[in-house]
Image 1 (cartoon, one colour):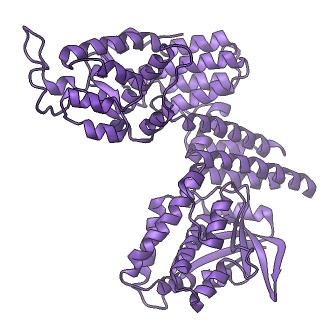
Image 2 (cartoon, one colour):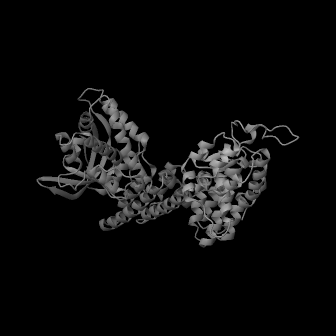
Image 3 (cartoon, rainbow, N blue to C red):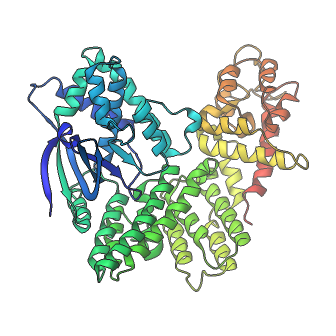
Length: 572
């Protein structure tokens, strides 16, 4: 039975508490969604006092659990849809509570809505990795410290708390915080769907979110698979077993997404493409992928099998997204898809897998980094190889067969041409991601060849990769040269070279943390060397060892880097 009703938050909070189950997505709203919500609040306050603003639907699974506190009873409801808005509004209410005067009746009333009078039962309960951050803020008002933020989801939640805190002074510039509290509790409207039937919960979610609304495709997929589990199971006991299995798997899927900002539609698309085949020679679209997975669910265990495949892809994508230094290679969808296939290949051992991934990286950086090709390049070839590896095609089953396919993939983009046309004499600063990637690999090469036990400074590596690529790259010969640089773009007996045509060449670029980069700017070379000396990277030592820096220095260093790059990105 479905029991839809219209309710304000005050009515919704009166006799119930909410839980976000482990198989639901972690808090994922970004600043854009929160700003839209804050904008709705600012518009609503300008309207008549009896006017409401419809926020959204809330779909709840009514559990049998009742919490009794004194004479009050609170039924526990699992939130299936609507958790992002509810979480944000509850965070906003907590910020209002903390802003109200100590001992004020409104503050006491709001505190008892958010945390029941036993001091333990929270209005919204989360069952995931960052529940301690949320619970502590709602109970105590404690803001998480930066060193407590362990994953992407933690950062999302911390950003939400910060944005709510920042919105309050904006509101208070024209209104009182108590007015915001009343508006949120009494003038925001929701259509609430309550049901005790698990099958109806997921069917209802899919129907409500099939009308072009901005719902993540992975969330839609989960609901489709849950609904199929109810539909295909032969007995209630089989239903329960399948649903419990799915809930466990989906808890792990969302755990992977919480670690890294992996788009849900990408997990869906890559899974459908690798396991069921490409669509017209390219990765399948999200809607096509969802329908394909729905149609494959023909047996009782099909939803679990599909979910396990989604988990496998999510885990491997998490590894790729988590390696920030690989961004110049993994920025292309078909490259990520092929890497997932290689990581999943059944016919190779781990040493062979590492070599295959190394060859994949070499080919991909040549194509998209050195040659600078865009995402339309080699789509069909990448996808075809990935699908054949994943499905254990008889012709792409062994290590040698896979390596042969990867060699063929890059045969149109040989390393000699890549260096000649894509690196030497080029403005490589114009491709900052590829430039930083190449320079960092050069730094690793210098470290590895500097003797046993040599390491690089982890703090400097973190500082360089934390910033935008363009902010981490320093021009040794300045883009806008000042005093001390006159005549240094000239080789004796030849015309002076144009500055703008040469300062972006790889021989003139090094990596620096942003602070040092901004300090160096157009200073004379001897002053720059003093700043560079504060840097621990080995590429800097080669620069500071020089007495001067001119056009000839740029050419010599470019030749050195180019000769190394020919080996670094040549085929295995």
